[in-house]
Amino acid sequence: MAFRIDPSSIAFLETRRGINATATIVSDEGVKIGEVDDIAERIVADVTFVSAAARSMFVGEARRVNPVVLGRTDHNDDIFASEYARALLAKAEKILLSSM
Image (cartoon, rainbow, N blue to C red; front, side, top):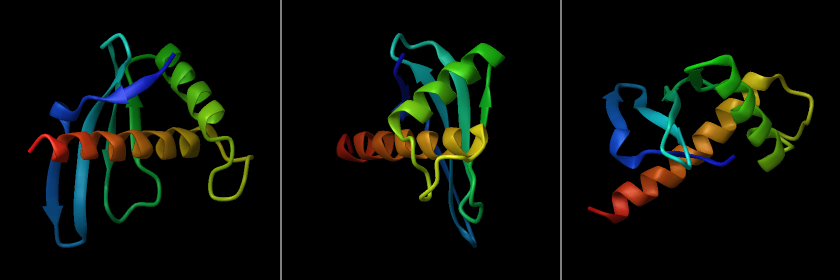
């Protein structure tokens, strides 16, 4: 199963430390599976899921798509989910900016 960020759900908040972004993660079928909260000064983005099954599917896809994160393969699931969500967010931001 593939996932994406809904570009229309992205909300930016400028702080003195950078720009934070919050967005909805959906499956390719359009079903909401979670949210990413990317805070500028944090190393790991917070990713929350609607269920344990959704988390498991997302982490499985994250490990398959990007098996090496920060030069290592032995991180915990939160690191893989964070990096995959950030990559999806970056792609959605490009789509959003190109439509402006």
